[in-house]
Each structure stands twice: as C-alpha cells, then as structure tokens.
Image (cartoon, rainbow, N blue to C red; front, side, top):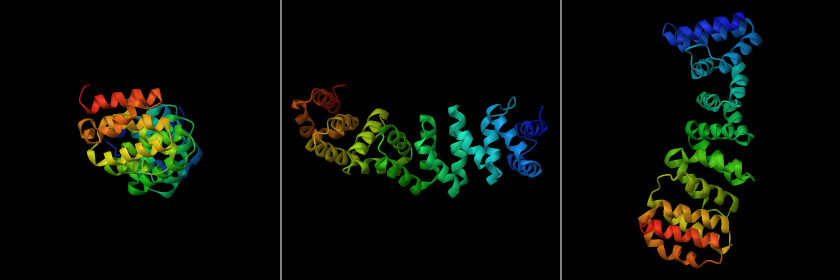
Amino acid sequence: MNPFVERLTNMFAKIMAGTVTREEGAILINYLVKENMVETKDALSYLIENPPRNVFQKTVLHTIALARNKAFMEIMAESLHSNNEDVSFMAATELARLRTEEAKKILMENLNHELYHVRKSSATALAEDFGDEGVEILKDHILNHPEPFYRTTSAQGLLGAGRKGKEALFSILSTDNTGAIYSVAEVIAESAVEVTAEYLPWVVDALLRAADRRDIPSIVELLKVIALFREDAQKFETYVAAFTDDPSESVRTEAQRTMKRIRGEN
C-alpha cells in the first residue's frame, strides 16, 4: 500500500474510533502536504473514492475541509464532479462551509456543469450556506441563463432555501422574463411544495400577463401552481374559470383540473 494512503487510512480509522479528532486529522493532513504535496493530494483523492472500511466519505471530505488549506481546493472541486451523487453533494457542502470567495466561485461556475447532480449540489450549497448572497446568485442565474435545464437546478436550490428562497422564486414570476417564469412555475408545480396564500396574488398576476402574451407553456404551469393553493385560491376562481374555454386544449385541460383542486373535488 502507498505509504501516504496507509498513514491516512490509519488516521481516519482512529477518527472513526474516537481516539483522534477531525481537527487533529486536519493538522496531520497539513503536515503531510508539506512533506509531499503531490503524494498527499493523490492519496486523499483516492480515499475519497475508495474510503477505508468503516470510514465514511463524508468524514474524509470534512477532515480535508477542516485543514483550510488552499492546496486541497482542487480536491474538493474534483470531488464535486464525482459521478457519485453523494460525494458531489458532500463536496459542495464542505466547499460552502469554507465561506471563501474561491469556494463561492467554484460553486457558481458549477451551476453550469453538464451533470444534473453537480448543478443541483452547487445550487443547494449556495442557497443554504451563503445566505442572502447565495439566494441572489441563484436568482440572477435563473433570470439570465438561456437554457431551461440550468435554470431548473438553480430554482430547485432556491426552493429548499426556506422563506427567502421562496420569496426569490415567486418574485421572478413578477418579471417579464418568459423563460425564467416558466422554469420557476414548473419547479414549484412539480415539487408540490407547501405554499401560503401570501404568494397567490403574484401567481395570478403572472398568469394574466402570460395570457396577454399567449405564453401557453407558462399558462399551463402557472395553473398547476395555483392548484397547489387549493381552497385559498377560490377567491380567484373566476380568473381560472376563464381558461376552461381557452382555444388551447392543454390550457383548457389544466384549467379544469385546477378548478377541481381549488373546489376540493379531488
């Protein structure tokens, strides 16, 4: 066994046994990187993908993050690109916990990664660990990216960011950005997230504006969002009813479903 892999394996085993803390492990990692940076980085990369018996990948990543060493930023970024979704998520989380400009930049860049789980992990980390700034980053990404797949993962990140994330999402419905409106409405509708009546006027207003420009895809998704409000949406029933006679079959069908939902018929 590679001596660096062996030393690190023994260390992680002791961390899991409780005889060494993760902070002490981080000190050893920093010592080893001074001894031989290349060998240490290679060993850590190997152990992330091939964790020792009874050692969690999260333990390896968290200990590396605690080292607060720029030499390991590349490892964290590489782990974010792992085909293993759990590893990718953990790497994004640990990067976000560093709260550095470099970590933020890496996460922002990966909002445009080709792999769905890398984009989703990056968006979730930004939303959960960078506060208002993270929320604004994701909102701007949704408003400015031309491709729906990329907007969608950022919208999903906002959806899991609590009240501020939801407010940012619903505020996008008040813009004139057709692509962003569709992506946000689709994500909200498909998530079946719990919504409160305070957001309902924003959705109805977006629906009427989508109708004015005959934006059929957005109309359908916004009707689905209104259905989530159920009985709370009854005061806007006349607006929804108007779409049951729409020339578009998809709009008529969705409006009829929404009417049943808000009337409590299904």
